[in-house]
Each structure stands twice: as structure tokens, then as C-alpha cells.
Amino acid sequence: MFTDSRFDDTASQGLTRLAVDPFEIEREAVIAMLERERRSVLASMIGLAMLAAGVAMLPNAAAMTVLLLLRAASFVYTHKAVGELERVMRARKPAQSARRVVLFAMCLTGITLALMLWPPPPDSSVVAVNLVRGVVVIVVTLIAVTLAALPVARDAMLASFWLTVLGMIILHPGVQHPALVVMLALIVIGIRIYSASTGEHIQSAAKVLVENRQLSEDLADALAHAEFLSWRDPLTGLFNRRKLFEETRIERSTQPRHLMTIDLDRFKAINDTYGHGVGDHVLIATADAIREWGGTLPAAAGHQAFRLGGEEFLVITRGLDDGAAADAAERLRSAIAQIARGFSEHPDIRISASIGLTGWRFGEGLDDALLRADAACYEAKNTGRNRVRRAA
Image 1: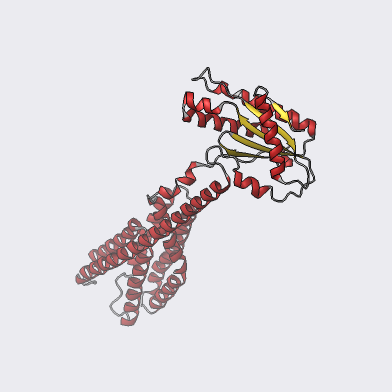
Image 2: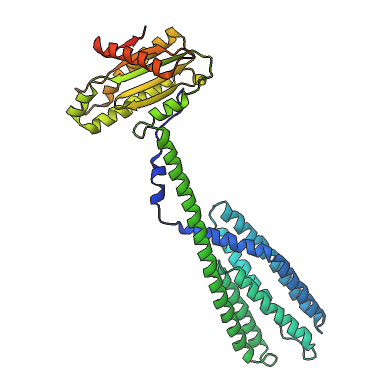
């Protein structure tokens, strides 16, 4: 059975694709961001530990512990949410639902971090208060930079953080200094500007990665196409003359072998009458007929089909005795004679082939066997065409 087929044209078009899929760029950026988030888990846990240390030194430690537990729960929930988003993005599945979950988780993150700035009692330790506030600002910055590739979720976290702080100041106007609102607003804006710059770098790196990957794929397609053309006939997809001599240089099989030289009858007249476009379609239809005919032969034998040039084809069969090879050649001749039925727009076209058949003796060079097959093919043409002749 023949296994060859015409090369997919998409390979030859690989190097012409210049556009980069925006989804792939976003996907790579998000995956890179989520990998950074996973690597920053230890830093986040250290931040929680430092918050716990600061809370332990406050007079209202019991109440602040509740807020700390909320922050810890938000941390766990957020970690799971971004993990699910990463899984979905890696699988190239729709991510809208996972994105919404991450957005909600980021809002909770902003709220729980802001709650850690709950106004402390007047007798609170300055060290403890500054420790908690400092850790909160650092964690907000860390999360904003980590989420740089998800600007909506990042901005939602920053907005929920600032709005929660603003709400606490409004509820406790006599405890917190009003200047804290402006100060935190400036801090949030600075964090936002810095993280946006980081996001642009992540996007640029993702674009370069996607472009390089696409160039590698295009190059692989081009190399595959070049390899294809090195041993395939580009019009019919059959093996070419170069492949013939490479494949038959060494023959180790003990199976009987036969050569069939196939020459389309009056092919020049087809080109002259109907044009070379129709002639090319006749050659392609002939190759398809040879492939279909090859599918009826024993598959394990390793038969091969070649286009030698012009309207000349060659088939090498293995594992057929003389009688089976002759019957197979006659079936192939008949199959080619039926090709004209597919040219309904040219009802008067005539397509047939003369076939020369010969055995290929072991130890014999290919050239000698080809000479006998060619001689048999010429005899078929000289005795009326559209027939099979076997070499003596």
C-alpha cells in the first residue's frame, strides 16, 4: 500500500504568516505572571508572619487577630483562584469564569489588606503600628507587581484597598489624620504606575516569546517543505527520480520485485488541445489513480510509486509473483483509462496509458531493469497503446 500523499500547502505558506495571535501573547503573559505569583508564595507567608508579629504587640490583639485571619483566608482563596486560572490558560480553555473569580479574589485581597490598617488604640506601640502599616504597603506593592499582566484585577485590588481605607477614615475621623487619605492615594498611584510599567515589560517579553515560537514553527514547516521537495514531485506528491535511486541503491528484501513503467498515451496532444492546466490535472488524476490502485496491493510489501518526469511514472511492487504482477498491471491500466470520466467539462478527452512490466532480478542493477521495462512500454505503444506488455 502506498503511503505518500501531496504535501499540505500550509507548510509552504508558513513563512508568510506575520501576524501574531493576541490571545497567545496574553496567555504567555498571564502564565508568566502566575508563575511569579507561585514563586512569591513564600514572601507572602513571611508577610503574614510579620503581620502576626505586629498584631501580637497591639493592645487590641484579639480583634486584630480576626482581621488577620480574614487576611489569611483571602490569601488562600486568592492562591487557589490564580492556580485555577493558570490551569485554564495552559489548557487554552475559555477563561472568563476563572478571570471573574480572580477579580473577586483581588477585591477581597484589597479589602482585607486595608482592614489591617484599622485605627489602633492610642496606647499602641509605635513599632507595632509601623510594622503592620509597612508590611501592608509592601504586600500591596508585591501583589500589584505580580498582577501586572492582569491590569483589571490589579486595579480592582488597588481601588478596593484605597476605598476601604477611605471608609475607615470616614468612620473614625478623630482617630486617623485626614492627610493619611492623600498619602495613601499617592502611594496607590505610585504602585499603580510602577506595576503598569512592569506589565508592559511582561507583555513585551510574552510577545517576543510568541514571535520566536512562531518563527521556529514556520522554519520547521519550511524545512519540512524543503525536505518534501527534495524527494517528492511537487505536482503529484509521488516520489521523484532522486528518491528512486536513493531508495533502490541497496535492496535487502528477498521478496520478488517488479517494475512497471507507465507512460500516458498522446499526452502532448492533451496539452496542445486542452492546455497545460488540464494536462496537469491529468497528471494529478493519474497519480491519484496509482495511489488508489496501490491500496489494493498487500500493504506490508512496501510498494513505491514515482513520477520520473513529464507523463512518465514508475511503480515498484514487492511480494507479487509474475501472475499477480501482470494482473495488477492490467488493473492499473484499466484504472487510468477510467480517469477521463472525471473530466466532464471535456467529454471528448481520451486518457490511457501504456505499461511496460518486468521482473527485477536480485543482484541486478536498477538501470538494467529499467531498460527492459522501458522496452516493454515502447512495445505497448507501438502495438496500439492502452495495453500492458511484459519484457521477455
